[in-house]
Image 1 (cartoon, one colour):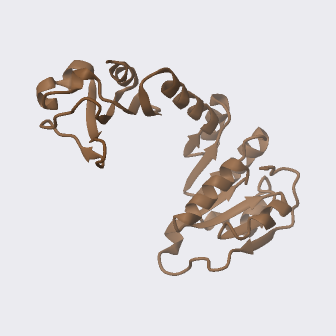
Image 2 (cartoon, rainbow, N blue to C red; image 1 turned 60 degrees about the vertical axis):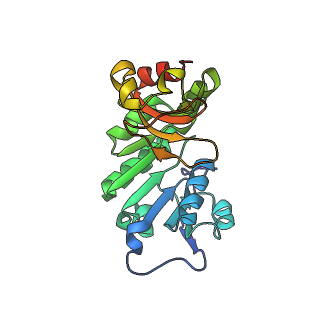
Length: 241
């Protein structure tokens, strides 16, 4: 679905009716190159949020099917720098490389975007090694959706967490049922930060919305909390009963 190499050099571009234009629209423009499942999901969600999205893929039939889903859609081989120039991608403040199954194409397109001077480049990687190469050729942000999701689900399957996000610098955010050590008294008195190395930043009770936690907040058994801190500390805290 996200084939970019050996595609047609002729560029065919279509636009969705009612595309947003006007003052400030340039701030919400993004080019999504590679319309596989990742690229389509990303592009359509951005359109839903009011962004102006140019979707590009070498599969002309796919591009035609997506013409009503994205603001603009174009069939082009973006491993060719000239194709990017014809599409005006260098004028976009952001670009996302959604190619996953062709590493060479992914690297070439990312390099071409760097050479074109696109200010912010996101790229999808399929491995840590692929991610390092993308960073070396100019990607500002690299995502590993399959690997990251696998690690995230592993935390949910094996523990008491309801959700889990880990960041690159060994920092994590977890949604979990409050362990007994964090209930019954104000958080400031329980000293969970100094004792367990985590910070409780949010709390939710049944039938209520999430609220910010403070030193005076008293967590009750069964409350859902958001805890943050070093990954190991968050994991250990979430497993407490």
